[in-house]
Amino acid sequence: MTDEKRSRETDYQLVDSISVAAFDVDARIFRTLWHSIVRTPKVALAAIQGDYSRYISPIRVLVALLGLQFAAAAIFGAPTSVTIESLSANMDPARLVDWLNGHDAASIDRAIEDSMSLMLWPIMIVSSLPYLILLKLYRPSLTLWTHLCLYLVPTNASTLIFILMLPAVLFAESMVGIALMAMLAAYFILTGWLIARFYSRSILGTVMRIGGLILLSPLTFIISAASQFLAASWILDNQFGLSLLDLFQP
Image 1 (cartoon, rainbow, N blue to C red):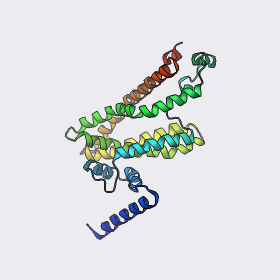
Image 2 (cartoon, rainbow, N blue to C red):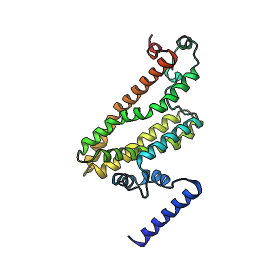
Image 3 (cartoon, helix red, strand yellow):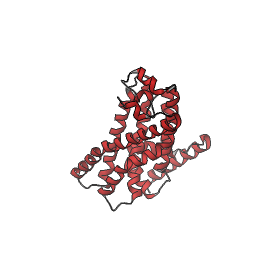
Image 4 (cartoon, rainbow, N blue to C red):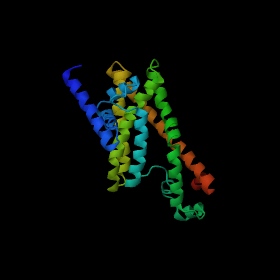
C-alpha cells in the first residue's frame, strides 16, 4: 500500500470515528451513497466480496433510503402511493361521491398510504424479479447474491437522486414525473457501467444487454402497477367495504 493510499484510508477512519462519536452516524453511509454514483463498480465489488470496511451493505442502504424517501415525500407533498384523486381522474365528481358512500377520501388515502408502506417490500421484490432473472441469464456463473448487489447499488444511487429532487415538487407538481425520469435514466446509466464491468467484454455486448434491460422496463412497471392496484383494492374492500372495480365501471 502506498503512503498516499495509507493516508487516505487513515483519513476515512478518522472521519468515521468522529461522526460516530459526535453524531452517532456511521460516515460509511455518506461515502456509500456518494460512491454508488461516482464509483459504482467499486461499491458493487465491495458488496459482492462482503468487504464493509468502507461501505455499507446495499440492502441496509436500501432500507435507509426507503425510509428517507417516505419522510421526504411527506415533507414536500409528493405522493408515495395511489390516491383516490389519482384513481378518479377525469371522473364525474357526483359519481365519485356516490362511490365513496359517505367515506372521507382523505381517510382512505391515509389508510392506503399506511398499508402501502408495509407492502412496499413485497411489491419491490416481485417487480425486481424480471431484472434479476435477466441478469442471471446474462452471466449464469455469477451467484444470485452477486446479481442482487449489481442490481441494488445502481438502484440505491438512482433512488438517492430521486430523493434529492423531491424538494422541487414545492415549485411544480410536475417535478415528480421529472424526478422519476431522472431516476430511471441514472439507473440505466449506472447499470450500464456495471454491465460493461461484470457482464460484457465488448461495447456491442454492453449496448445489447442494456437494451434488454430497457425493453424489460414496461413489464416491471406493469407488475409494480398491478401489485399496487391489487393492494389498494384489498385495502378498500377490507377496511371500507368499497370495490375498486366498481369505480371504473361505466
